[in-house]
Length: 133
Image 1 (spheres, rainbow, N blue to C red):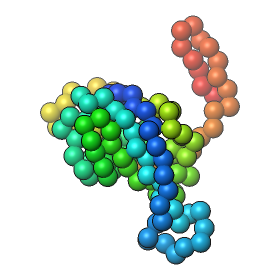
Image 2 (image 1 turned 90 degrees about the horizontal axis):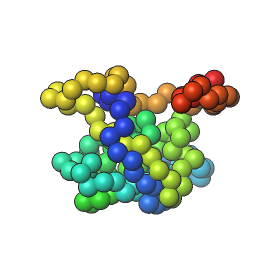
Image 3 (image 1 turned 90 degrees about the vertical axis):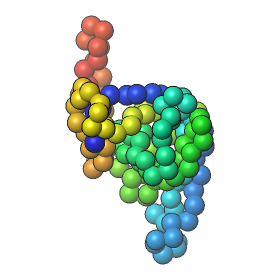
């Protein structure tokens, strides 16, 4: 579970594709995308392989880790249902770690599992804020 509060901003370093060994070969859905994201070292402190990190709202599993970057693999279905398919190296992403029992429960609970994709049809400035439609 996540609070929905952004803890850090990361930058997409690279995106590569590899064969998805769990499917038969032959179509675009047979490939996994591996994303590598640079992140502040204080955000990655105490992060381990297998941990969950929400990347712009989508929960992903850490598959590789250094002191200032991490990688995660994205299934074809997750690429279809999230903003991740539109990202390219150099793009900024919102980062969030899951809630632990000893954290303040500010924000709101979100599962981090994306079930659909919405399209923004309107954006209207309202004072110093924006109204989405």
